[in-house]
Length: 183
Image (cartoon, rainbow, N blue to C red; front, side, top):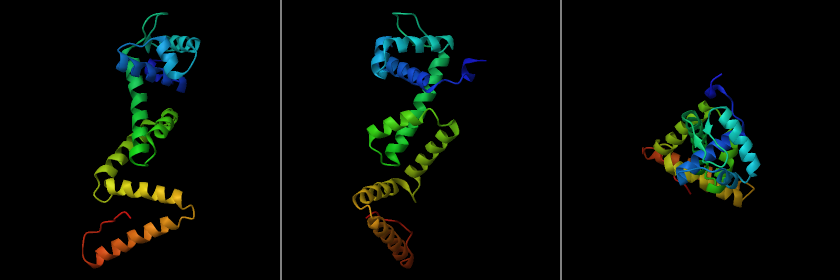
């Protein structure tokens, strides 16, 4: 069985991602830096590095620097890509605060398939570029979320939807291209 066919645990994926980021940020990864970043004991790092080395994903010698093999770098980039796509979707489309989005993306990245990640990327691109959706649509959703939080009886949502429908009717009567304004 090749290293690419091995299913990595969430924990090992986190180690790979952390090693990749440390190398990118500091040019090197050390066990103590990995332990600090993941908030784990150094003995846990040692066990994870041994497991990753057995899978030929890292080069590891006790008390030395940790490097990624080509297969390890590829696996780490896949994990990081899933994380970034999820975080960006949560922030840019669902208007989640960046810190909360990052924490949730970290939990979600391990369970999501490539197909779902690809569709999220496509949807996010659609939202950004479609003239019937776009930034105005995302702002409207963000506004709805703020108003709904402030008015749990959902009256603000009803008011917002009514206003949007009134705008569409007015534009239709005037023969204009339908546009929806945000309140």
